[in-house]
Length: 307
Image 1 (cartoon, rainbow, N blue to C red):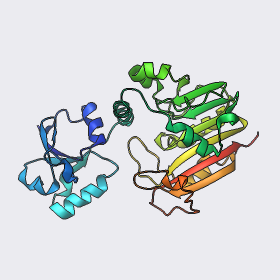
Image 2: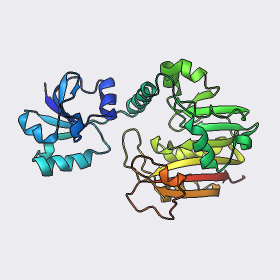
Image 3: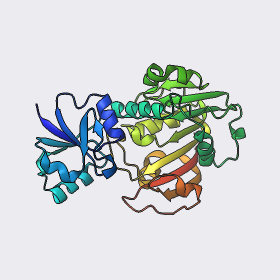
Image 4: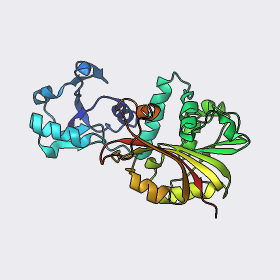
């Protein structure tokens, strides 16, 4: 059995352990750059700092975060002399990672998802003071997750939550979904089972980078929108691809593959801050250009062109 050290103690590791990715390995230690985690134990195994790697015999070091793999790999090679060929990365299967995230969030929220922040977020994207604009409308949230993202408003005629994992959410958080007063619809990666020209508004918040088939999915969102209907979107820009987020969205991709059949109503862009992606948006610290490889946020409201 291969002896391994796992680098990175955090939520990604939690997902890996939940999905039994470490089965079949002999984990001899966990490692992390955060010295506050030194001496802690995971499944009875000690967490060490990188300078102690030399004290262990191992076949491979597996990095738990695909997103930060290259950075950590370079650190291990340059600072600690670890041969590149023994440094590997756990690659979460897409849906394992996404369900792992929601299960962890369910625990953090105390066994009942918190969703009060969606009011401010969605009204902010729409640039509306209140939800009167949704009165008697059919409103959808694409990539909604299981938190009840439209629970904050009682104005719509119908509230739809569209998500490829809606069936999994029902299985894992069924009672929670029932109280949301929403209709959850299970979408595939490129088809939404909703009639043509059905929705007045479609929200999508940091979700289109999660789909495998971006253009096909965008055509489906366009199809279910009524002529003159609005897409209200938040996009994270320039983030590295991962198993859960296979698209790196740039401003050019959004303009050419997502917004080409829309008339722009509102277009606001800002740099992300490390601990709060939307901080600069709320402060009105907008920018006309996001430099390459720097993470940004783009909020768009756009109207489907008739025809």
